[in-house]
Each structure stands twice: as C-alpha cells, then as structure tokens.
Image (tube, rainbow, N blue to C red; front, side, top):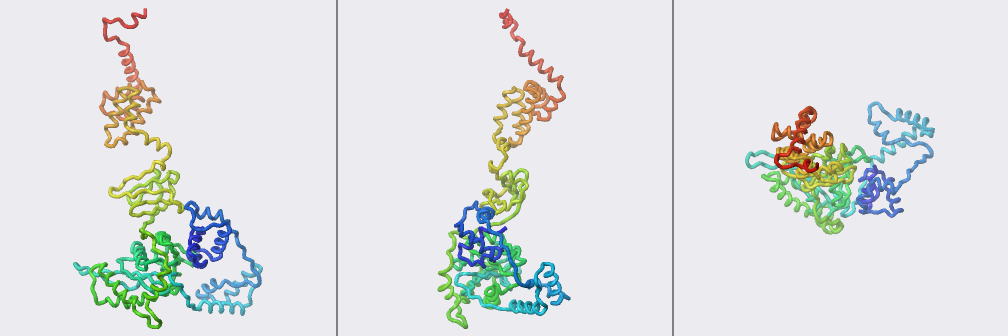
Length: 515
C-alpha cells in the first residue's frame, strides 16, 4: 500500500519529490500526484494518529493515470540489457521477439537498424557518469569499514575483532568513527545515536548500505523495505532514509572513499598499538579522528572540520530533546486467553484480536502492541519471574469481566442462604486451595446444582458428603445427587421429622391450642 503518511512527512521536511519517491518505494509520478491532491484539499503534515494510510487514501482519492502511446513502440531497454547477458541471446533474436509483440499489440515496430541504434544509445547512457553537487547539511552516508581493529584479552591473550562504523557528511566529508564488537542491530542503532551527538545535529537524508540492520529487502529500486527499528529511529530524528542500491557503491561515494582513507589513517596508524578493552580502542580512535578531520585538504583550502563548522553545522536540524531509545520488534499471535507471550511474560490484547498476528515493540520500560501498523494497547514491561500476567480488564469479554466480581465471601454468602451443610462444603473447598481463586470453579459448580436439583436436595447431599469427609469435592456432591436418590430422600424425611418433632414432652404444642 502507498505510504501516504510518510510521503506527507518527508514533504514537510522540504525533500525533493525524487528523494521522497526513493525513500517510500514509490514512483516520482505517484508522489507528485499525492502532493498535488493534498495541496488541493489542504492536507498537510503533521497529521492525527488516527489518520492512517487507508483514511488518507479515502480523502485523497488519487485518480488513476492512463498512458497513451503514440508512434512506434520503443523496446524495453531494461529487459534487453538483462537478456543480452544470457548465453546464446543476441540482438537479432530479441528483435524477432519484439516484432511479435508489436504484431500482437497492433503497434508499429522499429526496423532492425533502428532497433540496434536505440540499444546502443541506451548503453551509452548507462555508462555515463555524473558529479553531484551536494548541499551543505543535506546528507550523511553510513557504512561499516571492511578491515576490523583488534582487542586483546589481558588474561588469555585471545584476539577479538572490533568493527568500525563510519558516518560521513557528504558535503564536507567530515567523518565519525566508532568501534563495536559486532555489527548487530544494537551496535548499528547506538552508532547512529552517538554519530548525531558528535555532529551536533541531524541531516535531512541518511544513506545506508544494504545490511539487514538497515534494509530488509532491496531487490530493485521500487521494492525496498526498511528495517522497522531503523525506520523508527529515522522518525525520532525526523530524517529520511534512502538506501543505496545493491552493488552500487557510487550511491554513497563519500562513505566508500572514507572507508579506505580511515583504514589508512586510523586502523593502520594504530597497527603497532595494543588495546585491552573497547573503551581504550575508541579513545585512541577519537584522537586519530580529530587529527584526520583537522588535516588540510591537498587540492582545496581548509579542512574537513572547518568546512563542516562553517557551512554545514548551522544548517543541521536540531537534535531531539532525548536520544532515541532502542526498541526491539517481534511478531506474536494472540492466544485464546487474549494474551500474547513476550520473553516469557504474558500481556493482554483486546479479545477481538484472538488468533490474529500482531507486531510487538519492546523497550526497557514499555511493551506496545500493533495491528496493521496501528497501536491497539500498551503495557508496562514485566521483569524477574517468568509467567507473570499483565491484564487490562477492558480487554476481557463481558462474561469474563463479570467473573472478576466473584470472591470467596460472595460464594460463602450464597451457600449460607442454601443451608449450613452447603456452607461448610463451600468453605472447606475454598480453604483447601493454596490460591483461593483456584476453587471458584468448583464452588460455582456446586451452587449451580441447586438450580437443577433444588436447594433441599443439595443441602441433603452436602450433609451426606460431610459424613464421609471433611473436604468434599464438586464431583462427589454431583455423584451423590445423581446416584444416591434413596439416601437423599431418607435424609430429607429425617430432617423434616426433626423439624416438626417436639423436644419438650410436657409442654403443649401449637396443635393443642389450635383445637
């Protein structure tokens, strides 16, 4: 689906339509149509959180564009260049296939000489090079250096590789370098946070390589998928990510060139020194980095630091009030108890999402749950003992919410209204469990038997059960009611006779005075 929100956000930063198209995996024509339509209806960034891409699409209603072809049909040069690389494929074969396509579509084809001429012109265009004039403060290129530095374990002498992160301002070529023990997500994001703090501001565009910590999928120019955490970091710093194409180092020449220079002036310059910790290595790297940045250019005036200080730093956007907090993203399926499991802890989700797959954003303090990129709930993150539950009452079905109203005292009062024996049974069951809530189901089952068999029969069955054991169970009461009918009838007659029997023989009863 088209990223309408992202297009409007990047447009508010003043990016060109081509840069927005590259970042949002859309064509420039699509970006142009969306921005033009948004301007007509006065739709600008910032937007409300409930204005999702689907809502914006309904407001914009972008018209479908139609292409009208005229004249002779031009061949698909991208397809031709790709096919010519295959064994046995030549221009004559491709021209024959091209003629068949034109015949089926009813269009006029090019002659073979014209066909070859246009292919040759396209090849010359592909070989063309261009110098791009960068704007101050517009872009930062980032990458990992190829050759690692080394850290020595002081106890065992084991040598560990330390990988160098390189970030370069494209206009001034002012660099930032920091060593990490790996190239994983945490190191990648931490390096960016430290880089922005070192530069003292944020550029409008960030150009990374195609590592998995930055780009999940980049098969072609229009099918790029950014790493979720990396895109979230870009939103925090209000910058746009435009990944370099696969195997296209010219898309980030400054980073590629700086990697080689830094390998010489930092990594190689420290080759005869030994470092026993990452902090010690980074301290030495920072000293070499300062010397390198202040070294004058050979073919132009000034140094990298001076150009950055005078021309780029004033144009950088301000840093946010707080640095980006790394968040981990996971996918989970909502269980039948309307909870998801995250690192051994269980967090509730509205019961309408049972069996749906949701995205989970995890920070040190908060667990946020998203469905179709919309946040549906959040919880305070749980720690220590695994298996803990964080449940919000509103997430429960109505009948489950009513169950929360039950407690031990309510079951006892209900049983007491039936009779003393029923009260003793319910009280014994509630007291027998280590956690009182575990007995609620049994108590509910016993008290519901009164609706099926009458309160008198339930009271008699409880009396019989108490004669067998001090802690009867729901199953035993149920079996007595189902099988011990004669015994219950005898117990009922005995109880009625005891109720009407006059214990004091000398005293006249009420029947005497009734005569």
